[in-house]
Length: 369
Image (tube, rainbow, N blue to C red; front, top):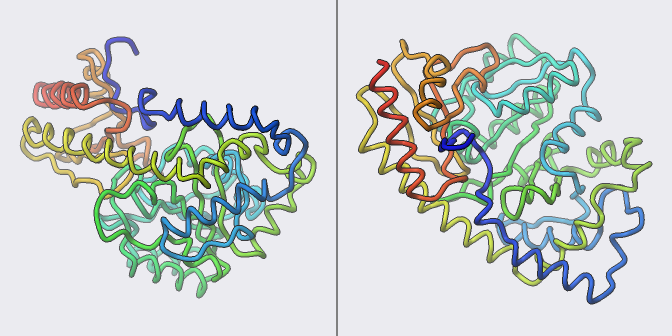
């Protein structure tokens, strides 16, 4: 919206996307007359991409990643959809965090899944709440964003992750781990990814180049056990289409191999860490009394909690009229809750716009309370 600093936008800023890096990749592919990406591909995706991606993840995750345990997707939303199509039936129960990534809820609805929310705290999914719900329901899947949680910004400690995997094995459900922010962690130590547990047979770890390179590539991956990958690769869509995104895979694989992606990820992490500082400083300066938040460990987002009487959805029109946008809490809720919360992103704007947007946001809430 013209004239509005829309802090509700949860994507990287156009100005920091790697245009030069992608131009280099396209030039190299054209100069070498790279034809591998032009025919139909393999069901699990381009082998060169999976091999170079495995090497990249091995270094970044600090654990051995096997290219044979990777399947190429058309980005993360597609990966979620594919997993639901292959691994669930309409009417199955899926546990999600409350709050959760709001656009994933639409995918679960598309597949006729019964969504049940599990509360989170500042350390992510509450294991005690999960154990209580497991006494009432038998889920097919549990969808979690363990690192840089969207929308709250928190990260689940390693001990909770391990207990989650234990519970999945005990109760026979699968963990759909949305790990798109695992490589955008800003504090140490970095919790181990749930990808460390794929050989348990109950974990599918999803990643994407949308957060670490460019969203328009529509390129991501699913990391899972051989049995689960076989079920995904056996879908008619992959068999008929010859896998996903072979041409884009050919462009990205050399950038993984020559270190271009690694350098860019480090650059972006530095930029975003500075923007976290800018948003944190502005919030400390301008927030009205009674509003709480935590500085995010990873990802793109701050989650603000206002006093219970505040309805962020009702205040959004006034904020937009004043020149700032945000995502109100109820869109992230499974049951229309989180009414006194909102999400703002530091990924799409530079420091001056972030500071201006937070100033306007806080003045708006101060005026209407």
